[in-house]
Length: 99
Image (cartoon, rainbow, N blue to C red; front, side):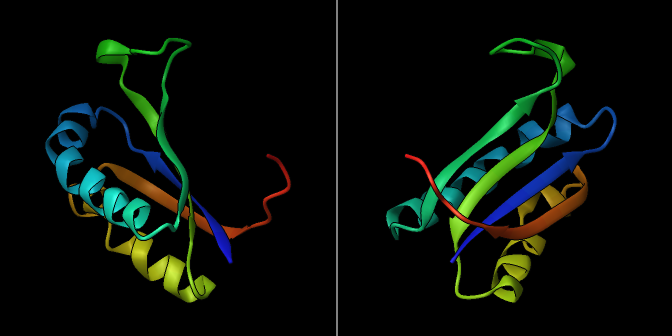
């Protein structure tokens, strides 16, 4: 089943986010290579493709896992959590309709 994982950044975490990004993207690449990643990306904190020093408000991932518990465990192991980027992570089932 598909699960939506939404990480919410804490205040002033852009340096932490940039430092942890290679490890974070590596995990997403592994999901993609396994055919289990629908989409992933950050949410700019301002209305701009490149928010510069404004940074990001969080991230969105939609990926396939065997259960909600498996999705939560995967999300809990994210390098952004260890680095203190996310102050909260929501994980919930997702039903793909389009495209």
